[in-house]
Length: 129
Image (cartoon, rainbow, N blue to C red):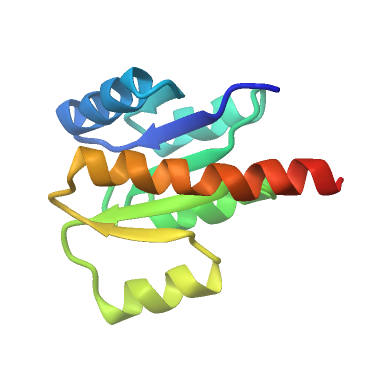
């Protein structure tokens, strides 16, 4: 069985690095990226179980990143983080089947629990194929 891999994309370096550290400490393979394009380039060469992205970034918003990432890895799960979750963001996220919306500031222990909650369904899906 392969390790659960998480990609975090956030232009705030400290926040991104803290998520990578917390998820790594919890036993996940976590990689952080500070621009959407570097994350997309990584996804072209590597598998990923979960993408966690900030909504508001200079290059593209997190929902556009999720849509483009799923063109590369259609089975990848996604969490969206934002300091300002609006109804418009909720509606767009629902259309993209985003697994979870998280509002900043987030509790790292809750994030880790949310990530852990995805694993049983991923294991079930792997056995079904």
